[in-house]
Length: 115
Image (cartoon, rainbow, N blue to C red; front, side, top):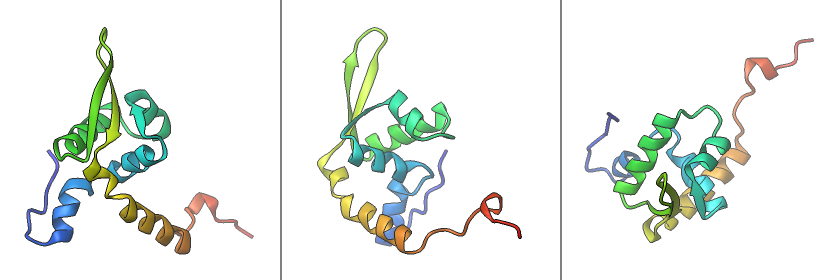
């Protein structure tokens, strides 16, 4: 089970909803492609396990950030999309993108050229 801050601070409350690893990248993918299927998330997020992806989608859905609809009955398959509440996170992700462009992470050791 995910640990939560459970503090009255608005930032902590926000992190309780979208602060888990992979959650922001799932939201990013939904802003880029408004309706995504589970398999599309898996392809677009290398390294995420199906169980973690499933847990993040359920958490985001239970928080009202995303919603789902059935697009195939047998076997049941879902398509996910942002709710109005989720679409309000666009400025947050845009700010993170701008910050990441301005202050790129240090290169990984494997990317450092040795003279």
